[in-house]
Image 1 (cartoon, rainbow, N blue to C red):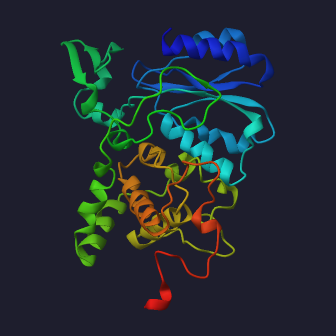
Image 2: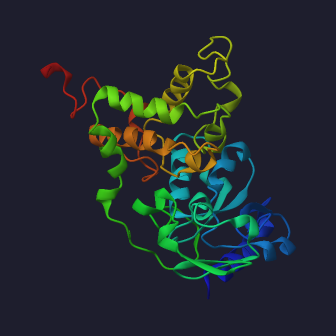
Length: 318
């Protein structure tokens, strides 16, 4: 049975005991998928699964605490759920998880950089390619060429937590050494060059907070420091120093919590490589505390604990 058929069958069996199931449906054009809230058996036919299903649906869960719902999760998405469970922001008994082994999703900006999608007539997906029909003919783009950045180093193609799994468990298919490759390139720069690099990148920021709004772990949006006036952490000035301040603050609030789902970078309208900042902090957390966010539901995030002396830091020897 195909993965989509298994998903539909599982949703059909569980739907009666749930308020709804969150999945994906065809979006406003052939190249986009949109979140779908399945409330009735008739909605199940709208469900889709393919590499265009890029959204991390776990972002909806904190606002649904107290309601019993179902959700479709890729491997990277499942890490967000585990992190939310660790922090007590959702309850496991309230969620039915339909896990999907995933070989990668596309980065639509990479497709748009190769072809004028405004003229597309249809999109079809093969195992290893995206085929787009335009007036001039068919453009076949290798899937590996347009995969999202997170997929190029994915170590968890199979969800780490689920009630139903629609397919076979997939082993990691990407080498671990590429995970922090982009971070290491920036680390090789001296301090002044690093600052200049990030000032150039972050100067494009329009402070729309799409990165915050898309993040499944940014759960204090109603009390966000970016919009607080008492205390006043940020002004409304549009200079690069204010933009850098916002992104540093945002990244540090996610220290030890970011699951590398890439939603912040995907949502950014200015194509800022925000995920590299998160990965740098993830790298430091892993080296200092041996912790990777959203992997083990029984773990406690390192910044949620206190030790007089950390084994890897050993302040008394300084």
